[in-house]
Amino acid sequence: MNTLALCSLVTAGYLLFLSVCGLFLNLRSRSNQSFLLMCLYAFVWHLGTGFMLASRDPELAEQWYRFAYVGVVFIGPGIYFFTSALTDRVKRNRREILAAHLTAGLFALEGFIGRAAVDGVREYPWGFYPRYGSLGLLLIALFAILIFASFRTLLIGLRRTRSQAKKKQIRAVFYAFLAATPAALDFAPAFGVSTHTCGFFFIALFASIMFWSIYRYQLMNPSPESLAGKVFATIADVIITVDADGFIRLVNPKAGKLLGYGKEELLQQPFSILLDAQNREVFQACLQELATRKKDLESRVVSLSSKSGESVATSCNLSPILDWKGNVLGTVIACRDMRDIVKSKKIIQAQQEKLQDTEERYRALFDRSLFCVFVHDFEGNYLDANEAALGLLGYEKEDIPHLNIASMLTEDQLQEAAEALQDFLDKHGMLPRSRP
Image 1: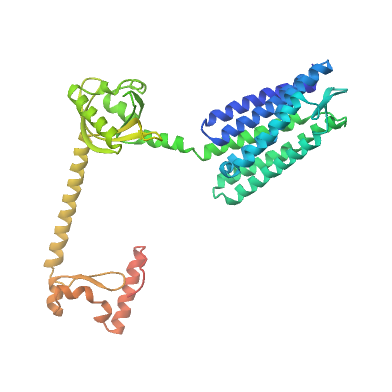
Image 2: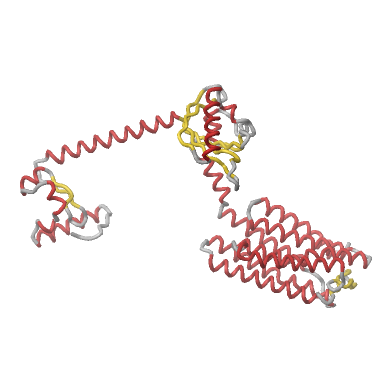
């Protein structure tokens, strides 16, 4: 096996490895899914090319390249799909993406059964290589159009995104395109130009930068699914999700901690194991009401049974999981330990008592003071005055909100008051809206 063949086959294996790793970074991400397709197209290209270069029989070499040709024609659509997914423009570009793949499919079909695209092979000192027919230049034109469209999509995404991390990711993809540019020279031998193929190196570099951009970006920008998982794990209430058959599908750490079960012990178990006979009837009634109303149920008292058999009184909210027809697929159950509710109420009550005590002390000092005490805002408007102030100046309580410092002071006194107020504000780091 010659060196070029070995390099192409190693590159094919590397591309397959990157495609799988990229997908498993986030199975639901459109960017990761499109990266998988793009790498698989490149994998087919280099796998077929590697075996073609390793072949000693021209007919066998031609058959291997017809296989590789499928990957070649789909590389352009795959790149365009990836850049559209990366910039969140798949919906906007879906017609063009579909048209590109359909066109590539026609080229691939002709490559299998015709000779307008692949018209045999040529023998070079380094091995056999395809001889493109009359459709060869048309394929190059299609590839150039899709690369141009991909560049344009990236530029639009770079201009419109506000995320700095996303901008860095798009720039990395630009660098990947620049790194892959020399790989286009691999088309030259197909038109009779005797140059060694080295596109495998630039394609591997291209895919590596693409993979790095996905990996790096997802570290800096967690997916909604991963963020939801972290939030789910930190919720202080018990959260349990059951399916339509009543089996537990998801629990948060609080559920295991409160009920004494391990992380995986509750999964796939019937929810009924957490209920005694009486509470099973209560919970069943809640499920029936939920199926009928298809709306959230709040503050339903249900006692859950811990692993040790202890009954834990909880206040539960139930939310239905509906399909597109409105059928109930499952239920999300959020339960709060009644002991926590009682504890919270006691804390709130204690804080209210402290606040009331503070208020009573303030009113006692304010009302019983022999000194005149006024309360005003930063604009000089009076808010309140004690009995001593009202008695001295002859005002009634209801007159106070209509008074201002300026109405009681001379110009000299008003200037001194303004300076004193400003000194107070500066000392305490406060900013008034305006001076009185």
